[in-house]
Amino acid sequence: MIVVHRPAQVTTAMGESLDRSVLPPGELVPEDALWIDLIDPTREEDRLVERHLNIEIPTREEMADIEPSEILYHENNARYMTARVLCHSESDTPKLIDVSFILTERALVTVRYGEPRSFSMFMTRSSKPGGCRHQPEAVLDGLIETIIDRAAEILGTVGQRIDRLSQSIFENEKKGTRRTASFRAALKSIGRKGDIISNVRESMVSVERLLLFLSASMPRPQKSRGYQSEWRTALRDVQSIEEHATFLSNKVQFLLDATLGLVTIEQNDVIKIFSVMSVIFLPPTLVSSLYGMNFKFMPELEWDLGYPWAITLMVLAAVLPYLFFRWKRWL
Image 1 (tube, one colour):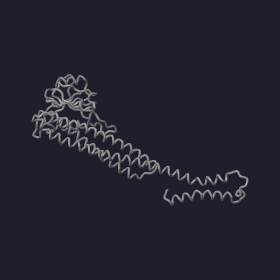
Image 2 (cartoon, rainbow, N blue to C red):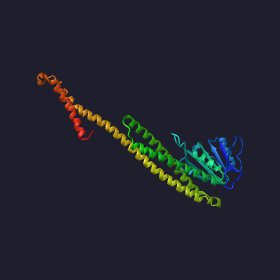
Image 3 (cartoon, rainbow, N blue to C red):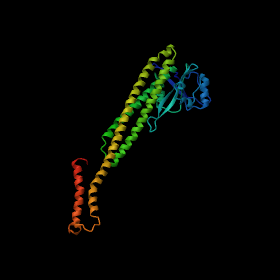
Image 4 (cartoon, helix red, strand yellow):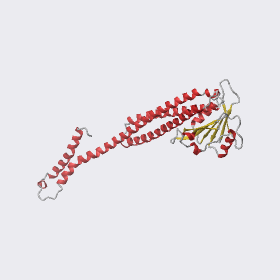
């Protein structure tokens, strides 16, 4: 699918904006298209945009390359940049998708195989007065800014959830199987949050490389020079998000270690109970074993109180170790 964003026909005092429309099959790309968004494009749609701007659209396999020289390069007066953007961040299966940005003098082309929320957020903003200037660089700047804002929003949400999870772990008053089940759920939750933080960090690293390449390769005309300060500000924002992601990652690792430690303590308590029970029942077992021997001469066999004596001896042999353990506070 090809989504075309063109300069709005009516410009208000609040500023410029973009009009969004889906290009019908078989139609040519409008000459005044400022942003061409390729969503799960077919080969025919790629060729249509290639002929319109005299560029080459990278394939999905080329976008997934990890070598910087393959995803950040300059060719035919166009800058090809690929970044990883978080997608489905609010679901149980967040993931990263590769998004290619092709910046030309006439338009910005984006190629993506997913629906990151940052793109829909920028589309909504750019359609409002003052949402986006009528320059390809302004569209790219707005998209990058929205991707960064979305990453910061995701980290903020994850941080709040980690705080609540920390309270539930260390203030867990449940007993028995309910406590074990809560620890199991906490471990799963920690794993999911760790995945999201890792994805955000990876996304910001790719955006940081994109900004550094963009600042270094952008020509010196006046219209491009005006975005240098904005890109430097965006670069500082990316670096601060990376630092915050590192902090949250360390916090998640601490919670993981603490939860595993609590689980180990729970297991040790269970093992301790079995050990104490075996020690308590060992002396009575010894007494019963002694009186179960088939010796011919056993004085106690002729006693009228032999049986009560044996029972009393076994009870005392069990109670005395129990009282000793309680006195030592091992139970």
